[in-house]
Length: 543
Image 1 (cartoon, one colour):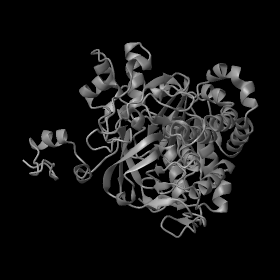
Image 2 (cartoon, rainbow, N blue to C red; image 1 turned 90 degrees about the horizontal axis):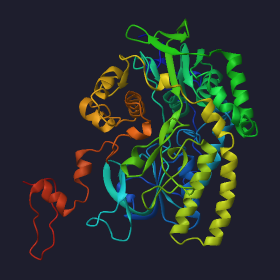
Image 3 (cartoon, rainbow, N blue to C red; image 1 turned 60 degrees about the vertical axis):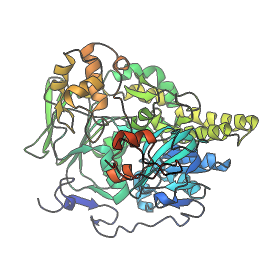
Image 4 (tube, helix red, strand yellow; image 1 turned 120 degrees about the horizontal axis):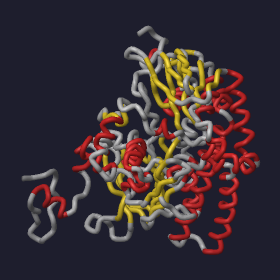
């Protein structure tokens, strides 16, 4: 393939919009001057303390705000995040963004720099590039007896358990699957992945690009790409026309929110710069081994739009994997058309000591996520007796008021951009649902006809959800497809039963973890003991 022709099929097709050059050249990024002043950056598992008052998982707006708030009240806080730098997806790489990048990405992106500056000055521990693979009750044998929870963390190739009094999960959201014929074809990718490349590496598509789907983020990315000089052939909006009727009762509340003016400007910007196609009823990606065109159906009419890259976005849904593996209860949210964890007003889950904040608890946006994080961090300080009840209530009320303002207009957005059922559950039996195991919608329907009650039984018949993604890409679709076949609500079908580790670990990492006596006996069949009765250290599975 010729250089600079295509993205993402070949690295040579990536264009560095920050310098007008190509991938691999110096992009001129700068590092935030105030970074690392008070915060303790942990480089390896040896730097991680055995126990903390609070462990926060995720360094997006909710996680950063929770960690900052808790640390101001004297809690020993560890924030663990799998990314290179804090900010999450919304504020990814904002610290090293140039002024031109900030202008291109919009004012909401620049807000993240101030939040991260506060985080860098906080008195807490920060583990970047860390994998949190389990959260659960502390083990009676291997735990210290003083902390109720245990968090499995892998850092620098070494896994270890970390004890905690409280845990806040701020793992954000995942892009919703968008299964239709051709969606697994080379040249088709998630819009969020394109945004990651743009934010973290300054790379944008170098040829004709089509965006398809629904939701505010679809138009935001289109605007960002257009400002970066990308040739956006069309924006294909799959939002059901009937959504206006259900959203209309909430229009006045939306008009009084900060989203209204921003949204109007965004829509006008995209409509002014490229073609927007609405009223779409079906999609099909076509091409011979590589995406070359999008076939768009609008009732009885069809359009053929040529392009070199197709970016898909159908909204986002809470990232459930760690919360469910921790044993947290969950519910089906009809407005979101997705499962979300069951939490109270403080973000507390059904598992004692575990709270959930931000988009991980329900899609609320960056500003509201930050305020939810503050409330969760404040509640942790109260629970651990670092804050009096009166002071807590005063501060809680302030954050609650800010949260209420940030949530104004969200109900309208949820109704207006709720993805259509035909795009959430593929009608074509040949469409792949489980990308990891290449399981089609037709195969799942065959198994559903056998009378399987839920996705876990469907998994046993098809391996759907057993691939590397652990159901992240197929779970929502499989659940709704099964509920459709059974004629019951998705909440009655349930979700995958998830167990730790939720992220891949090497055998070496697992073997290095402390083992209970029961675990050693299960593998070795016996436990060697020293003459004084103490248990010898056993490495591996001696037979």
